Amino acid sequence: MSDNKKTQKEKDFSFRKYAWKQFKKNKPSIISFYILILLVVVALSAHFIANDQPLFAKYRGKTFYPAFQTYFNSAKVDSTINPNTGNWEKLQFDITDWKQLELESVVWAPIPYSPEKPDRYNREYVSPSAVQYYKNPEGKRVVAPGKFRHHLGTDAIGRDVASGLIHGTKVSLLVGIISMGIASIIGITLGALAGFFGDKNLVATRFRYYMTILGVILGFFYGFIARSLSITEGFNNGIGSGLLQLAISLILLVGVTLLLNMFGKLKLPGFLGKDTNVPVDSIVSRSIEILNSMPRLLLIITISAIMKERSLTILMVIIGITSWTGIARFTRAEFLKIRELEYLQAAKALGYSNRRTMVKHALPNGLAPVFVSIAFGIASAILIESGLSFLGIGVPDEAVTWGSLLSLGRQEFEAWWLVMFPGAAIFITITVYNLIGEGLRDALDPKLKQ
Image: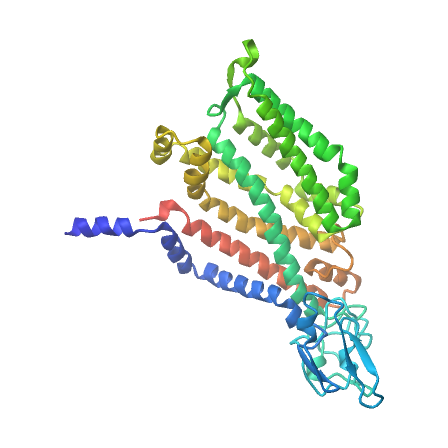
């Protein structure tokens, strides 16, 4: 009876449920996970948490929802009738000073300031505890009431630090997730190919092998080197245009490679027609070693300096294409182990194609350690973005990020709030991702499975 229960328990075992149960036992990791959820919520709702436009306002008998109405269209325009003159009064929401209007009723955002708009009455590094001023609808300069105070102070031109921190959360999380998304696609693909095929498991004719290599070289030349000017001009004209040019280059690379690969299927007699082992593992491993031999931060700075237009999108792409090596090495190591297991051998014996065996059987079972590397990679990407923002490289001047706020503290050493609060935000976010990574590493370790 006990053997039957044990067998049933083994059948009902789910490693996913087991891993989540183990992860919840790690108190620092589960607390960090909840903090991360809070950061995501703050990032998604930043427009409604910190905004100089009210959430709700009633003006001259008409109801407005400025923060909601400008979420997709920042230059939203509406109008109302002035009862005193009978004339129409036009309001362009993004430039209207709502604090100066005699509103009949209003609901302000928790932080009633936008990150990029200065407050001319609280310039020159006003500290959180200093006396702050506010111009009321009557046009008088008075001491700011509690709801209009800059609770974390201001910078040299009067921008609210708290608002910058809230909107900087969105930038930092976006940079971490998108850049590591790009790195994950590259790293998992190359690592899986290297680990699954190794140096001897992929066989092709010499002609097809040489043609594929030639296709990669020609595809890269025509896609990126020959079109480098077009790509640069595209990004200079705008992010959308730049991404379109980059997509065209990728299509050219893949298209030329596939075209020459298909041409390489021709059967030729003699030396070119003989089969040879394709050293996939050696090619990927040498590429990883070459990229790791270059200082990543210096490489990112160099690539960023080439671009005439500074953009967060370009920065995310650059961080992504230079951060895939760790993920590739983890994926390769897992596939080297998995490819020798019985279920993969059975899949090969059943005649499944290499693509089906790798994608449907090997990949789902080899990604667990990769998630740990991705968690640490997101923390690293956020730290790199903060460092570049601090140095003023790669990030537009108008973009408000934690690093740019921290950089303002260099100009005024007495403005401690410009160092303390952004520094604390960076420290907390990096620590959260690192603790989540530690928790995932312990929870997904199969050696701990009993």
